Amino acid sequence: MGDGTWEQVGERERPSWYLIPEVARQKREVHLRLIRRWINSTPQRILKTDLFEEAFGEDHLLAGLFPSDRCVCGCDTAFSIARAAAHRFPELASGLVVMDVRRPAFRENSFDLIISTSTLDHFATREEFVASLAELARLLRPGGRLILTLDNPWNPLLAPLRWYTRWRRSPYPLGYSPFFATLCKDLRAVGLVVEDHAWLIHNPRGLSTAAFLGLRRLLERRAERPIALLLAVFNLLGHLPTRRFTSCFQAVSATKRSGFSPAG
Image (cartoon, rainbow, N blue to C red; front, side, top):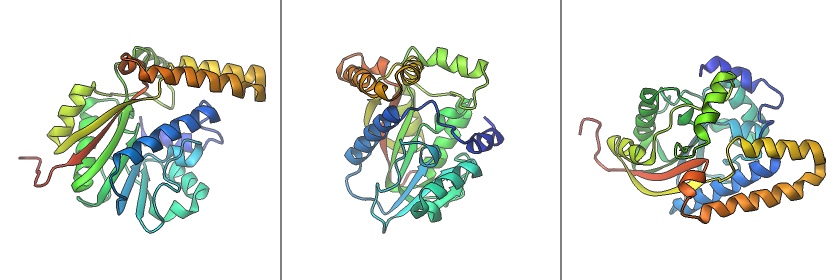
């Protein structure tokens, strides 16, 4: 997807219309619990890739997540999205930059923690994915942590949804995302050691969005209770042995090996 398209998305009044508040809050709570579980101590220098949530959604993560004396940065490829995030959360504005993760503007070893939530899975090719993963690893200091979430290719609804977004030329394309075993190999290749993983959000992709929007349109405010009930039912899928196939996202926590070099 070209940077210009993301710029156009950021100029829209309601670009996150498809993510109703209840689902956005669910997504935020799930990610916050995961991040807090995976960070042992509060890092000093933090980077989050992709500012779409901070700009428009109730699934935002950065605001209030870390103490105010920490260096908290966020990046996005579109100026319009970074600008909207800065307007919404002025306390974050000084740390927000316009940057393509394939060509970072920061020096190597700049961060203790990088949070990348469904950013790299928008690239169309594996080559772009691997290159951007290597750049994120380069930005981490030795011992630093990468928390990465990506579309889950084990989910049988991902392939038709990916086809649909391409057919309709959606401004939110679903790109390449590796299977978990391949992802672990890719992380090892750039000097990162996987310490833990998780399967996140078990709402049926695409189908649940259509159902929630339909309930909103039909019941308006009275839709909150049935939506909450459906979310609770879908959440139960995460406790079953089949959770690998029902989750929307795969997540990993990986740390950077000391003394690693790409040629090593």
